[in-house]
Length: 186
Image (cartoon, rainbow, N blue to C red; front, side):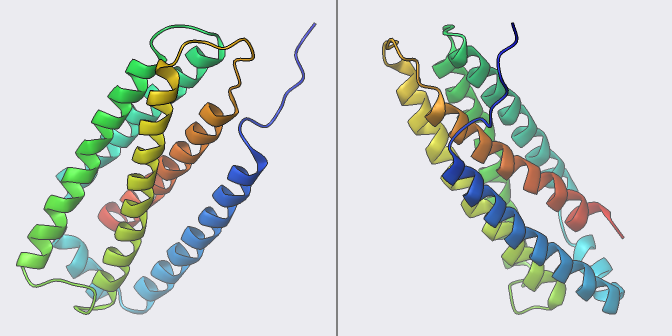
């Protein structure tokens, strides 16, 4: 007999995720429209970015998402190692955080900021908004790792673990759209 399918996590978290994705989608559309009206400014701005840092950030978030996914499956099945995988995900995700802070420092030192031009207004707003979501997600991973260390309880409630994992995957998904939009697409 097959188990009925269900939406992982809490409905409120899914509503939050959908709202956040809608905000990011509007910002992406604004970016695309502005780029269509001034491609030279956007090409010049993109040339000042550090694509190696962007790629390293992408890889760190993908690896962290893999670790979160395997931790969630392990937690659901009552296996050991959930907390370790979540701690590793948090550690790996710090490469994104540190890389983004380094890149902000480099750009700011070169004289770029929100008011430099339209490209940098979008770049700093989009990436900092995403950065804040990553930091919140790292806090969620920390809380989940601490929860996973506790002895198993009979009910094995997975709602918090699945909700946190869904939020983290949303953060990763947004970056997978942001990286090519900012660093790659002409």
